[in-house]
Length: 167
Picture 1: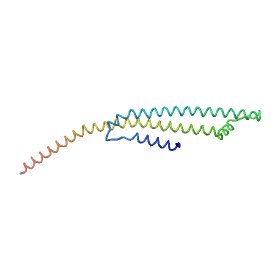
Picture 2 (picture 1 turned 120 degrees about the vertical axis):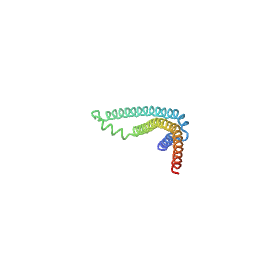
Picture 3 (picture 1 turned 135 degrees about the horizontal axis):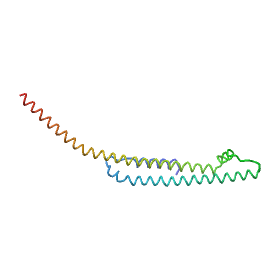
């Protein structure tokens, strides 16, 4: 599967997982810990993979640098390989380019999954706040309705008394 397609698939999956069904907060609260665990461990694995790939790229760089220095020394023992010359050689070498591309991709995935992990922390807080506000609405909402009913009844009584006193 091409990397861009894989990236879009993961980004879409993260976005779908982050959505909250406000009609079923209790189920969302119940699933939140396992969702967070899944994305946090996926991030940890991707981070480890990125570190391994970074190490592999450094090994390729060291191997190619050594080979180039030896090759140049064989051609001309007085030739001095500068960092600039070495950087230019590495930048053009296909093995080094491939290792760099692999490192970039691995770091992107680790970064993306790190964002997902943080987003699931925020989702958890949002779920707690939503459930709290729903409980408050339920508790105070009934109290408010009862208060409104009582107020309307008193208002009706007051109007009735005024009407009786005017007559």
